[in-house]
Image: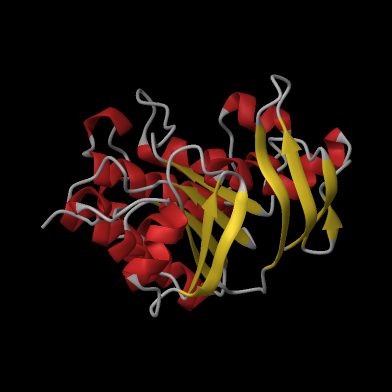
Length: 253
C-alpha cells in the first residue's frame, strides 16, 4: 500500500486525513494508534475505498484507489478483508452463512441469492473457522455466540475472501482482556502464517507494543509517529495522544 500526500476532507469541512504519506510493505503487521477523532478509522476506510480521497494518491497492490470507478473498487475490495468493532454479523444466520458472505465478490449473484454456494467456497469457510478455533460452532446462530466468538467469526469471514490485506477497526474494544489477547493472537497468526498484511486500529498501548511489528501514531489526521512498535515508549504515546498516559490507555488486568 502506498499513500502519497493523501488528504480527506468530509463534506462538513472536517479534515479526516491531512497530507498522509505511507509505504506499507506486503506482510507487515501494523498497529495504528491514536485517540478518537485522530484519523485512525478514516485511514482504514480510505484504504478500502469507503471514504474518497480529496487530494493525493492511494494505491493498494499496485491498483489506484483514489479516483477508481465502482467496478474497480469492487474488485479491489475483494482483496481487502474488513473486521469491525461491532462484528457486523447477521444475528439470525448461522456461523457458516455469515462466513460465506466473504465469498460474495467471487460468487455469481444468482448463487448467493439462492444460498447455493459451491462446495469449494464452503471448504474455504470451514478452513477459516478452523484457523480461528471456532469450527465446532459452524451451524450455531451468530446471536448465540459470545462477543469474542462473534469477532472470530468476523475474522473468518474476512479470511474466506482470501484477501491480501486485512483491516481491523478497534476489533477488541468491547472485549474482556483474555478474549482481546485471543483475538489479537488470531490476527498475528494470520499475518505470520499466511503472510497477509494486517492493519489494526488500537487505543491500548500495551496491545500495540505486543502485537504490532510497526506502529503508526495519528493525531488530528496527521502521522506523528512511525516506527517499531516494541520500542515505543510512554513518552511516544504521550506525544501521539497529546496528554499524559493513564490506566485507561492500557488493557485492564
